[in-house]
Length: 441
Ligand SMILES: NC(=O)c1ccc[n+]([C@@H]2O[C@H](COP(=O)([O-])OP(=O)(O)OC[C@H]3O[C@@H](n4cnc5c(N)ncnc54)[C@H](O)[C@@H]3O)[C@@H](O)[C@H]2O)c1
Image (tube, rainbow, N blue to C red; front, side):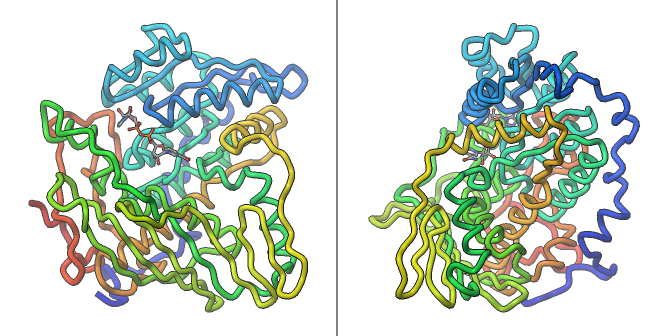
């Protein structure tokens, strides 16, 4: 598969897509019905729901409450939703949410969004559900904190772009869980790079190379679907694979430095140590991304037991180098380090969202996080297929990894819905060819 166009219909650019998408028009009526609760003079209360009460949902709930204190805004977590009942019990203890506002099941997200007074939604499920959950939150008129990545494939990204535009039209604010964008060291360093501190950027590197394998929770559950959702990280339709799930953070930093997304990718990888464990994902990738101006970003991601580990980025310029987290080394000049003290980025991202809501300032990170999610998906597909994948082909791809209802209405899913895949094999996994279907086991 090298640069194959995936279908006979003419591909569209992202902007054309947004212009014509019906999803982009998610009920304008809700704009006017959005409660007039947020006004800068009174700093009224924020009432949050958490959708996906796992590790991150719980952490983001704490971060939200801490951020509200910093912003001087009254805030509560008033409802939670999880597909399973056990995690919602944590919410009673952790956040004092009453039992009748702790929802479980496939439709739990809709019930939580429907709780009166809710104006802030924290989305922290596995990313496969994100496009539909985000669309529902925007349709319901909520401001959103939305974890990364935001989709697992081209169809999911298109839903995100469209719902992001709908959020803008409604004046709803959205922050994504790419928290480096709210880290003072990154912000200051990337500004310096963009102001020319290391000259023109000539190359970038991005790493999410962990020194150990990813968790597996055991094949517990009554149905295949339940076992998959409990082990969501191992299934592409739920997690998007490691290269997207985690490494999107570092890819996002590179896109931020460049002020653009790459136009093509090629790469390689393997399912090496996961071996015969249940699941589809790979555990190591090396991908080269090319930006339109010819600059390349070299990306390495993996979750394999090894001595070397690094989660970082590096930028090379004509006049120096930088670790964009907070240092610059001009060639022959004096090195600079960020030495400021700042609120932790996991809290700062909520402070920024809350301030934007209260002050009615524009803040919508959907396009940037979706661009970085699609970048990572493009690299993953390049490695899976063994070919070169171009941006527009990825954007227009019709290949959906998940069952249809995951994209259209997950509240109607049942435990019988199920999808499984052979771990992709380069040379035989080509999602861009006409009528490509999942090679199920
Ligand atoms: N920004 C960061 O640094 C960061 C850190 C950790 C996790 N995350 C992101 O947060 C998300 C969740 O990760 P986690 O580590 O909390 O995983 P987790 O497994 O601990 O939690 C996920 C929760 O979502 C629930 N869930 C699954 N499907 C659901 C559905 N359809 N409706 C409602 N609930 C559902 C699960 O039961 C589980 O409780 C992922 O996208 C991950 O990438 C981001």
